[in-house]
Amino acid sequence: MGDDGARTVSAARIDFERKLLARAAKGRQATVERPDVIPASFGQERMWLSDWLDPEASTESTVFVIGLRGDLDVAALRGAVTDLTHRHEVLRTVVEPRGRGLIQRVLPPTDVPVPVVDLPGDVEAFAREQLVRKLDLAVEPPLSWTLLRHADDEHHLVLRMHHIAADGWSEGVLNRELSLLYRVRVTGAPLRLPDLPIQYADFSIGQRERQSGTRLERGLSYWKQRLAGAPTTVSLPFDRKPGEDAALASGTAFARIPGTVVDHLEKASAAEGASGYMALLAAFAVTLWSGSGQRDLVIGSPVAGRESPETEQLIGVFTNTLPMRVLVRPGESFAHLLRRVRENALDDFTHGEVPFQRLVDAIRPVRVPGRLPLVQVILQLDNTGFAEPEFPGVEVSYRQLFAEKSALDLTVSLGRRGADYIAVWKYRSGLLDESTVRLLHDRFVAVMRQVVARPGTPLETLGLVGG
Image (cartoon, rainbow, N blue to C red):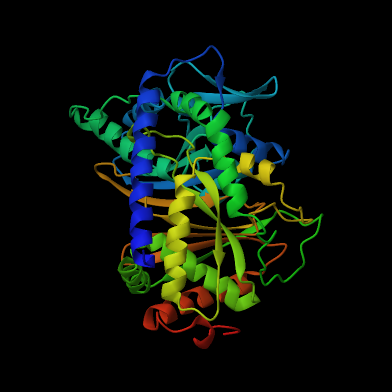
């Protein structure tokens, strides 16, 4: 059988297996019974540990600043926040150590405070204070809301959220449902939200059941084989060398990518039966190779972790990190590289629920001072249908503040905003300067343009190295 036939069979097999796994997960989660003690999910465990490592600040928190100009009904907003928190148990769940693990406790539904603070001055300073304030995850709910009033028709809603309760997909769910719940309270329209078939705690119980015993061992066996002989680190153009005492302070650079550049890349990927993300991953690997000469790369890829339909409308932390291994062969074309990335990615995604920390513990990669094991660089694509909140009669603006610490050397997040893409480059500022990161961005865009223009040309002849 030729390569094309093998790829077709592999894709069909993997698609069939994923459907079976989703169906099995659906059946288990629909009938799950809650024990007296509910274990934390693997995602909650990961976020709790990251937060625990920094005793001074919540490194896994984010803040949204929502500008509201117009006739805001404050009582309706408070009611909508309470309705949302009653609907999603995870928004009123605390996590605490118990024995040798973590457990979650769902607090009883009560009215959620949304204090109104008269603050005609610096919204940014207030939001930054919320961002760095240490949260006691065993006592405090993972979300808090404050309404800053500048005038009767001008407010800012400051939402402080810990990632132990929500991932990027969840942000869209939260915004859509908050908007609908506010509209219902203001207009008296009928509520058109279906009941949630499960809650996040039910998912956690099912996840622990699925990722144990023989099934976990099979997944770990796959990843051990997949990463055998993989490099310990990714070479980056550091301005300062990593070391055991390297600080975790981070910077964030925002850059724009013309939508046509990514559109053309996705069109080229479709010709090879690959997704847009697979093409971006291949182009990013070429970018890193072209600057360092490193051919064998492990790049972290977040996966949504929402195989079961019941999880699609839940708020919670479902994401998992996959260590995607990409081998760049300079003598081959981008089209050949993309085909191999596609084939490997399909197999990787099939084993995408294996918890990243369990994987690291099983592989035991060589530790390098000042750098995380196995994955130091992440590439992620926001294609979850993100929506900003909408309130009738109110002009809404929306922006996000990011924690100013990161254990990862580099995280690149791409998302479409209108005609173009916004690239968010979060980097360890103790290792990289913003000017260096912006050069990486420019190189990434140049690579995308080049490989689309000449997909059949060997990579080593495209003039990318050192460019």
